[in-house]
Image (cartoon, rainbow over all chains, first blue to last red):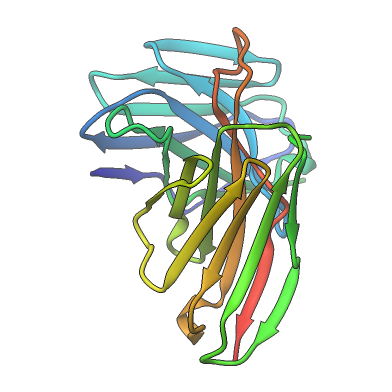
Length: 112
Length: 118
């Protein structure tokens, strides 16, 4: 099985940097994904890590440490539109089916 | 846009009635999924499909059945709706193509179906 933990809520200031952490325990690991979800909308793909290290995509970066079962999503130069829920998800290496297990999400509020 | 259409987008139904949600995709992807999303639980997998007539259960499959008779359509049926099945239901596909930044079979979601069981 899989267990994924992330903080429920975070608040940050426009223009600042915020780090959203995710820890996971899994019986098989084949990649970690981050999704963004605005209220009332579908989740959208943000980033993917399968090897240890940092992946950078513009204002968003994601880090993975497989030995520690740990990832974070780093958002720089925060904008009001970044207010959303951020979902950490782990892909299961076992059993086929390309399945993702999601954490409960971190609700980020960006304030002026 | 991964070419996913869900219908209906909103539905109110009575306890005990059967309900079918439809997911339609236009790009011939192999993997399709049904998730439900509830406060405090996040997204949970109900059923998934890895090809025509090939389906399997997810972690919250009780009370739900699925069918996939064509590549493009994945149907979710609530056999006898209960209030605990009031939720937002998301269909998703595993996008077959991949790049250096987006791995193969990355999951993309449809717009969601809001179901209320009264």
